[in-house]
Amino acid sequence: MTCTVCIEHEEALKGQCAIQSRVFIDGCNSMKSESISLHENAQAHRLALSIDSRKLQPEMSPATLACQALNKAHMEKLRLLFRNTHALAKNRKSFLDYKWLCDLDEVKGLEPGKTYHNETACRTFTKSIASTTKQQLADVINNRSFISITSDGSTDSSRTEQEIVFVRFAEKGTVHTVFAGIVSPKSPDAIWIYNAILKGLEGMGITQDTLGEKLAGLGCDGASVMTGRVGGVAAFFRDLQPSATVIHCLAHRLELSCKEHQAL
Image (cartoon, rainbow, N blue to C red; front, side, top):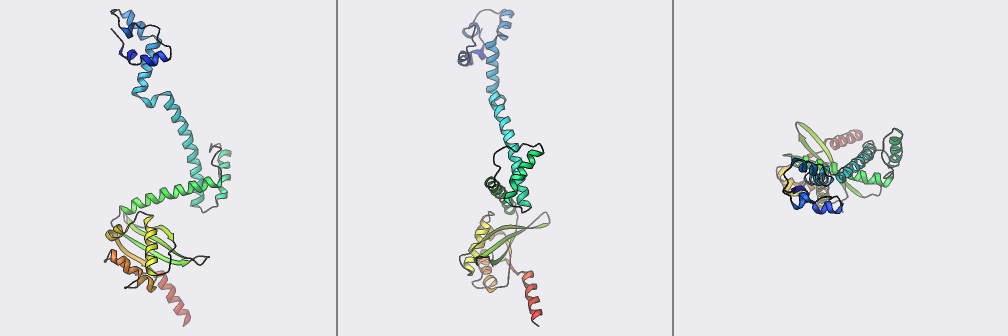
C-alpha cells in the first residue's frame, strides 16, 4: 500500500526535509487503521496535501494571494489618482491642481500612495483616459448604421489653418455629437482639407470604407472650397458615398444674414 500524494511530491518533501518515514512512499503490507491514521496526520503527508491543493488551485497559494493583495492595494491607489485626473480634465482645471488634490485625499484618510504625485504623471493619466474614452466612442460609432460629419476651419494664434471635426450619430433615438479631433491641413485647398478631415476621423476608427457604407451627410460652411460640386471637399465625400447630403451650416447662414442686414 502506498500514498500517491506523497509519492507525487516526494522531491518537494525532500527539499523541505519533511520525510520522517518512507513506509507509504516505498510501500507497505500493513492494512491496520492505526498505521493509516498515523500517516494521515504525519507532517509530510499534510505538507504533500497542501502542495497538491495549491497545484489544483494555484490562485489560492500563499504567493498568489500575497500578489493579489498587493495588486488590489496598488489598483486602489491608481483608482484615486485617475479619479483626481479625470476631475481636472472634466472641469478644465490646470494640471498644477493635481498635487493638492492628492494631498487632500491623504487628509481625508484615503491612501493615494507617495508616487505619481506630479504634473508629469497627471499628463500621462489624462492621455490614458482620453485614449480609452476615444476607443469606447469608436466602438459605439462603428456599430451605428449611419453617421454624419460636421467640420469647420479657422486659423490659430500662429495663423496656422486648423480643421475641427465632429461626428454625429443616433443611438436609441438620441442624436449625439462627439469631438473627433483638430487637424492642421498642409494647405487650405480642398484636397488637403479633405485629407485632414479623414485623418481626424481615423482617430475614431472611421476609414474611407466606413464612410462609403455609412456616411449620411456633411455639415460645413458655405465656402466654395467646402461645398463646391467640382473639386470641393463635398465632392470628394460624394465620391465615397454619392447619396451623402451636404448641408450649409445654419449657424454660418445666420451669421451671414445678420451681416447683410447690418450692411443695409
